[in-house]
Image (cartoon, rainbow, N blue to C red; front, top):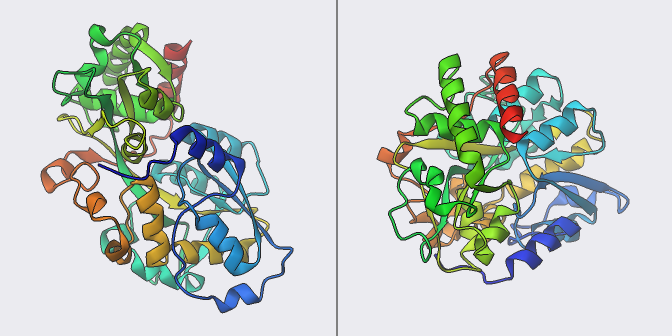
Length: 361
């Protein structure tokens, strides 16, 4: 699990600052020559979720400026889009958030004729249930970006017992050394799995049991955070974090004692997707950006920097073999069988939201 040793805090602040990234160019683009120097692309993405030079390389090749803004949770992205945010050309929602945005008319269909590099996406990711597209695949609402799992990042120098169950996040021995994601659905989904229920359970009794366990856990939790837990793990301030696979692997560069585990009860699998908001001001350029990051070398450059699994199978020859061969990043079948995508739960989601509000109060 050796990787780039650039300081994590500095790197994250640099990415939040604007022009970030990491990848190799895949060849010249005639389309880039047709764009005015005045063109700008407005990207809204997670922090630490792009390659080291991806943005700069795109700017240089296409002669444009990229404004790169960050959000820290799916809930933040959804709230901003539902509040009527305009000006963004690219967003990166996960599966169930994309479904909500589609239903609300907040994202527009892509013209797949303008993204021929979509052919590089592996067959099993081309028509996910939340965005299958029509039979011709001429129009879809998104293209897969990166995927991973929700698991436990832990400091093996401090946590000497096996980290193989969600139960450890309820262990009083680690009071004040635990963080949970500030993600309503991910927290409840993994608690459901811990209790032996489906991640997308809509049973009111399951919800009440999960809420009770989370309220019981709250005194042990140092913070509910979807971004700063990486720094907290790296510094040793916390020893156990519910987190995302790629995030935790980035921490290893700063703290070689940090490891990642997928609990035996199973967990959620997420697929983040690139989409264009319904009111995007630069639709043509957005399509060109999507096609650009689907180039094998560019896509591999992103994975090599952020250590997330990639649905772009054409990128594998350019991907760090340590990433491809790590079973915590690309899990074996017996683990994959216990993974679930989050689904939109309709009106029941309001009940989960009320329970979440009560937990955080």
